[in-house]
Image (tube, rainbow, N blue to C red; front, side, top):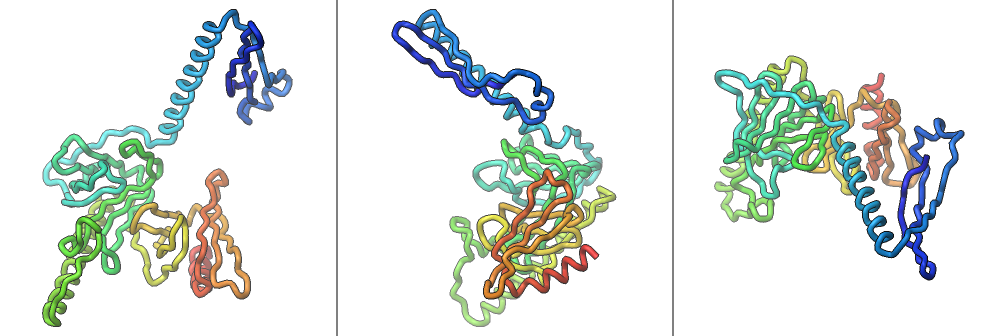
Length: 329
């Protein structure tokens, strides 16, 4: 038993041959097939040029069809099981005018996040049929991050099993709002530069603090309502004072511990490391004279790839060690 890799047509004078290049089966079937004969190449003679072209095309098309079906199967193999949201009766707790990440469309559109009996529902503004349902039993972590030191306030859900958002399979869904949207340029996303006098600047700073505090209270209160509705989820908040800089993906970001995780939630790509699932934390490149070191989180489930965080300042080494000793003691 072998697997078809490629089909090529070979012409030798008036004769036409189809050459089948074969590969080995999957590793988990090799032991079963130890006694079987393995073919690497199979060549057959075809009666004429037209028949060879037609047969070759049919085989290639069938191979592409099977590959597409297998890709679709793998895409949905570990998705959360379909479940129906049980809609609450009466007044439904609602967080209005929030954005979702990943976005449901190419352009940013706000929507409302609702709490129901067994999960959450996000409904995009102006499109009641465009919605995302998230069951409570598929949420591993519930995060709230303040906008005190950020431009956005957010509620972040880290999922047990991924879900499809559009055509993307995601483990993290985030709902956020810009805390100071009136002071942000919508085209560039940067803060508007205002030329103000001293009194105006003081008034502006006071207004910023008021709006940040108001947004924090609204989002944190809604996160607590999610906790009450689910009866088992706990709200985790990042401890900024324990944060340290590192590169989990392609750029340096501020990584912050929570009670149960190490996270970066401010912008995609997100990072959520569940500390209870970590077996070993390994330090690399701790060499005299180097200003940075690396850290590797190895999961208890060795099928899960290790998480590498690079370019951490050496000044953060001792605080990180103390934090890890406290977590794993």
